[in-house]
Image 1 (cartoon, rainbow, N blue to C red):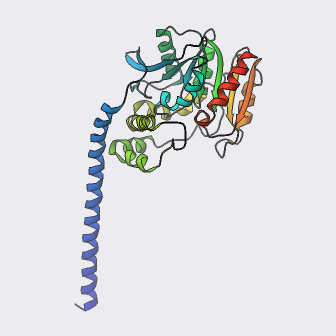
Image 2 (cartoon, rainbow, N blue to C red):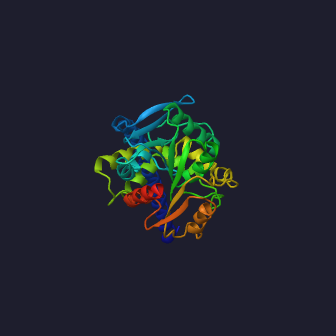
Image 3 (cartoon, helix red, strand yellow):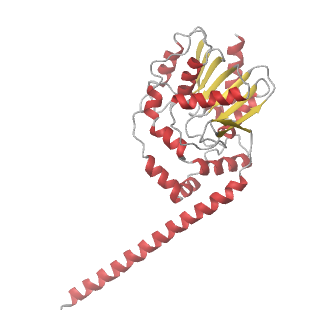
Length: 318
């Protein structure tokens, strides 16, 4: 056997050993991430601080926070995937409570509410929120919702018109917006959570609340609740059903006599080219409808809470 063949054999042996060692290192790292995730989940369970009160709805506990002593009540509903809604709404709640009684509802799978395997349909979600409010004897209120809450809110105001005094949207979703027929990789997202990789990715993705009016304790609570709720059974099923959720309200409009105030992101880059027009269409047939454009991200309440509340007060007074 010539020298070149011997050298080639040595090269392949070294290469094979290197691949095996690399594979073992990767398996070991994945095992450490998996075990570490289990350990950290248990530790964080004891560190998450309760807030609000638990309301029994269809055999599960839904977390609801009530703040403020105002004569009028506002019920807050979160956008899809907002892991800790009440904490995320903190800047807005702080602006609202001097003027209103503020009720923050965390649907199943969100915040400190129980997870559920019951189908996440528009009808079920709306019915559960209403049952929680009924249990608390809250039967007259403005509905204020962010993002997908615009869909649930549209169904809600048509089902319970005698209870809702106004709807306020915070860059709220519209039934006819683009992209709701997308198939999302739910199983891959759930695998990321179960393996612990999601925790690592969230850790190194930077602080989404950096520079915003949230103290360190609140941000830490949000981080832990995010790890807890990341693509749990409820939100995974909600995302799976996203097309049917939007389709369920395509033939609905806001009641003509219902005050309708929509705060809309002024520059929606790449998500929906007709974003403003879609909201203008929603208020077109309303006797008391208005669209207010605000400069900011999709989570307008993170940076524009003061303007939201000031404009809301003026709108309702007029």
